[in-house]
Length: 255
Image 1 (cartoon, rainbow, N blue to C red):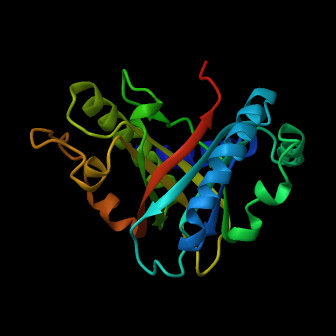
Image 2 (cartoon, one colour):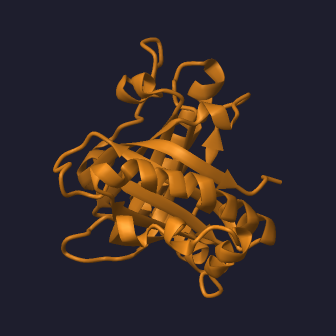
Image 3 (tube, helix red, strand yellow):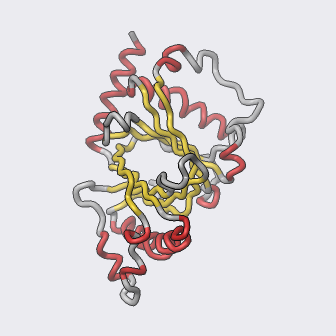
């Protein structure tokens, strides 16, 4: 009964966060291999500086560009992920202001629409579950494992991540028993279709590709008794996990 109440509370809290918290967008793009160098140049030379301004203005609280590493269907699948966390989804960001920031540069040399194609656009609500290892800097955040979760009961999944997974990772970070430099999760608001059945996403941050591709926890790391239970195993339909290189990121200062 207690677990049922906990799951219900988590569902209600998730709904409240969707209404009250900032909205994050995941925009997936496809860039042809021959255009990738130029695409990343434009993002890091112009759009990263634009994002810094938008964070200062208060329109954005987070912006990042990630490049997919490996994966399947590499000749057709999206290979760039743009993440924007907007303070006000209706107000959005001042996208046009980039032209005034670089008055001596033609927009065709700044824009990316001509060398990329938008493939997917996902909306997520923030949750208070973003953690970082102690004594780390932005230089430690090099790779991110992006994981989408398709579950039968999203509230049950979010309860597990908040009550079990998050404190376990925090403890492992403090004891030096994980290579993870950060972790967090969010609930997916839209879309919800027969082709996109995921209800939440989480991310693991690493400082190297070697760490990202290796077991995240040391051999002497042990889990509490009852950490995995039947309810956890039965709740999952599928997961979609891909590795990304963090090309650039801008974040508002934490209070």
